[in-house]
Image 1: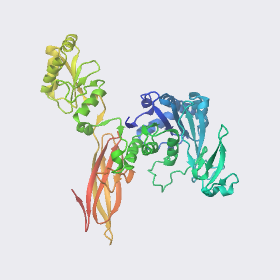
Image 2: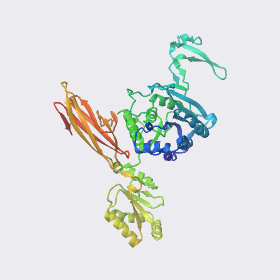
Image 3: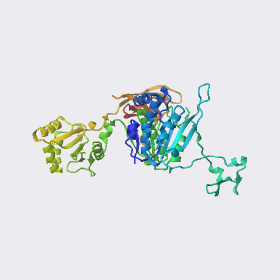
Image 4: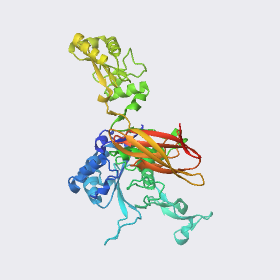
Length: 516
């Protein structure tokens, strides 16, 4: 299975997941706080979701969440687990009205308290310094890999229950259910309880990506390690800052991530790419990125055979398994009629003429039957068709009752062109040591509108784009460069999730020169 990062409404996408296919689900849905800060990225998909959640108060919020958890329960394997992350605003409603009704009572495993420290405003009550994570399993047999926290070897000196063995290691005796005693060594750590003291992401953390409710990797590591094994499938239907997928990928799990925010999906993509290097990227888990629209240029540059098979499948047909098709036929449509694919623009008249012959030779009986019934004898799929092709298809239909349907790619799938981008470079200042401060101004253009820019100030084409600045809404940056050659790359992302990249090389010496 290929990992998937999907842009879209998780409710609709969850419906498409195979029943009992997921090993572990972690969801961190937007909290029921009725505050505008719950709109984090601020793009259209997230704002629309925020408005939907709040249309009818707590009852509407629970109903909105419940219909999604129902689909998650269906997709979960009998041995699977779900961890639902929430806070005090709705935790009691979620447990009683949602989880307790979907999962059997005996399948409630823990109410985990994630405890953390942060600065809060002065108020006449105790500080709110924890979130709640409900852990439910689908059945009585489930995955649980016990985690242990570090417990100093010398701690036994303060506890009369512990003794030292001949090697000086501190231990105590523990009885199993069958009354058989066994040794527990302090060096092996202590069992983890249901209160987890894990620091939040602070402003100086290396993990920080600028996502206000970003969860620490240590939190997800504990959940994923305890409730799944290598190769298992992890689902996060509210991707947010991408921590679940980043951790799952590092721990060699398969994953599916969903979010209807373009920025959430694209930032997660940047984050996944950022945590691989030249060596590990050779072995890293591959993934597919599914957006609302497909990049025209990417589709046009695909391997021809790969594109044929993919677009016929999107059309609802069945592609031929061998390259080259069979006498000009690349597959069959849902109605059984032959299909030919041309990965080109302005398909000409000869393609239509030749295909009418190929369709007849491919299955003459079917061809004659379709002509008699006034049904399509076949389909040609291409990016666009020239005037001659359109006229020839019309002539065949009107004069010979041979119907060949010309199917543009963008009637099968949504297609858009990537944004354009220009980069301007200006020197701002220089100092005695030769360091130059450079002004970088990126300007992107897209019919869909620009979402954000990302920057890599030490770009290496072999390693790929590694964002030093992940989210920049202005397209303006300043950076300092020492004498020598430097490569800078800027990536622009539009509201459809499509992107483009501009790279430059700078020669910094007595002056700053932009080189080819």
